[in-house]
Image 1 (cartoon, rainbow, N blue to C red):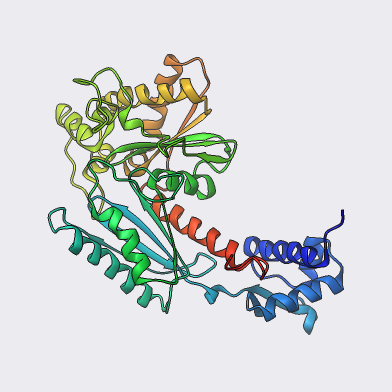
Image 2 (tube, helix red, strand yellow; image 1 turned 90 degrees about the vertical axis):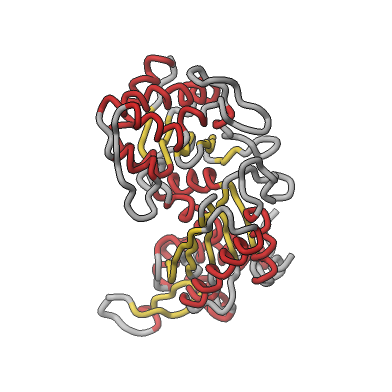
Length: 391
C-alpha cells in the first residue's frame, strides 16, 4: 500500500533534516543528490521546513555560480536549547548547548555531603540557571541527567539506592518545577558513558561491547547488537555487587562491600597504592584514584590488572561481548598500559576472545552522553510531523 501524501512528506522531511544534521549545511541541489528526490519535491520540502522554523539560509556555497541554487540551508540551531547534567556524589557539572549540540556554556560546582538535601538541590538548580543564562537560553527544551543508581525501566525515575545522597532523587523534580516547559530525562551515568564511547570514543566500531566504569564506584553498561540493555529492574551492570574472590566477605542486598567494588572502587585502589608506595597529587577535579593510577609503577598496575581481570572475566563468561572498555576517570588514567595488562590476564582466564580498550573520554563521557541523549530527544520531537508533536 503506497504511503499517503502527508506520510511521504513527513518521511522526506525527516530524511532531509537527518542529512542536514549529519552533513551540515547543504544546497537544494546537494539535498536532491543525497536524497534521490526530484527537484520540485526538494523545493517543496525546503520551503516547508523553512516555514516551520526548522531550517534557514546560513550562507552560500563556494561554487562560482550564484543565485537560489547556491543557497546553503542549515538547521536553526537556536530553535531549542538543551542542558546536560553529570550528577556525582560530590558535585554537579552542567553544559548548555544549542539544537546541534554545540556547547554554549558550562560549569560545575562541588556539593558538600553535609549541607543537607534542600540546600544541595538548590545549589544544583541554581547552577543550571546560571549556565543557561550565560548561554543566552531563555528557556530549556530538554534536560538530560546522568546519575549513579538504578533507573526504573517502567517509570524512567531514579530509584532510591543505598549509599546515594537523597538530593539526587529530589533534583529531577526540582528541575522540572524550575523549568516547567522542559522535558527532563534521567539515565544511569554508566549507560550514558557507554553511549558516548560508542558515538565519539573507542567503541565507534562496535555494536556489542561492555563498558566497565571505574571511578568512585564501579558499574558496567551492556550494549548488545547496538542496543543498551537495562534488565528487568534497570539493574544490568551492577557489577559492584558481583561476588568475587579476594574480598573479606560477600556483598548484601543493601551494600556492595565484599563484592567487586571492594577490589576496584576508588577506596580500594587508594589502599592498593599504599601497599606499593605509590603517591600522587590530584590536579583540579581529578579523582585521587585516577591520579594514583596515572602515576603508577608497573608492579602496582599488575596488581590492579589482577583485580580488574576477575570482574572482566565474569562479564565475558556470561555475555561474550568481544570488547570491554575500561571507562571512567580511572580507566582513562590507566591508558593502554592497564588495558593491555587486563586483556592479557583475561586471555588466560577465558577461552572467549576479548579485546580490552581504554576510554578516551573518561569521566567526561557521562556529560557527553547526557547531551547526546537530550539532543536526540529534542530533535525527535521538533522534527516530527506537526500532528505528532505534543502527543
